[in-house]
Length: 421
Image (cartoon, rainbow, N blue to C red; front, side, top):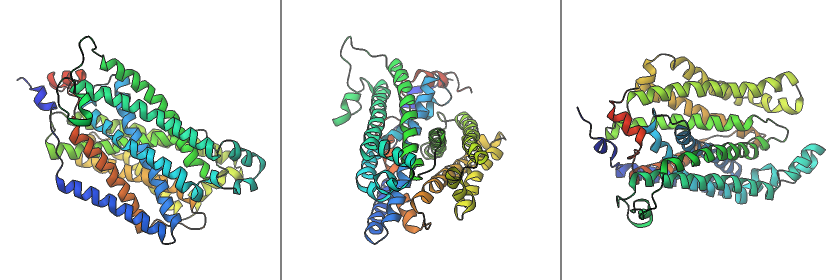
């Protein structure tokens, strides 16, 4: 029985208007909550929630793109049908850049340590670190240069990825018409080769930029905390969160738009195995940092851990994070059934995703809210606004660009060969 590959892949995704209204409404609600909280004597609550969501969603949006790049670098075929969903996370990147500038120029004087003059009262080494490495100009140049480079590489990557599918089709009108224009004679481009090279460059840029995001916007919030492994811990947790979100979104799209012939149980099976492995690696990076701090037992280092392990509510939250991100995925993803039954896998991915969000609360809030902990309704609504904005960017991307690689040789081969695992 022959398969019409073009009919399977060339699907137009149209999200219902009610979803648009809901996401716009959620974003506006979060924005109004942020402004209200900011102007009513609770600026610390508003900016801490802003800081939390910037760090979390910056990691997730870049992590999704990295996942797509990893599949191109390794020439893997199992997840090709999920690749465009991963690439759609890049739609949030312009927002990340704007949030970065807001955090530096508006919020910095309130919460970020390197804007404060208090560092001069610390010990000599700490004062020198902040005067040389964490001064405003150093952080600004480092952040803008690294994040900007990663974004430029990602935009070139998306250009070749989408143009490969739509070149010569006249599919787009207006601003994006160049993506579907017919190439000039004699100027054919090997998009696969370009995508491979850009994927490698993005992997390097991601590792550097996310490492320094972790150093500058999480680790340096605590004056005495040092960990050379903290960057790896952050960006691998971001990849795990992005993978969980890809599983959730792809499952919802599959049900809503009947994509079972392209996104099959095999994709979920392999994604679940990868989620299992990344959960174990997340625990490894956590323990690799905890162990030397524990056996060295130096007060200037143990303070960071002690606050999060012995003080409430961080103690309870830490155990909840360990349960959600490691224990539940480790135990439940061993059986084959949970890897292929979508409702079970989506539940596991949702629990892991929520655990990774709470993890950022535990990492950030003790450093910014020294004398109290407050994550109330306003913080929840601000976080909900960020979630709606992220999903709004993704839905707009997927409704405009092809949801599958129309000319992806590996995906086409997989479908025409019967979709074997």
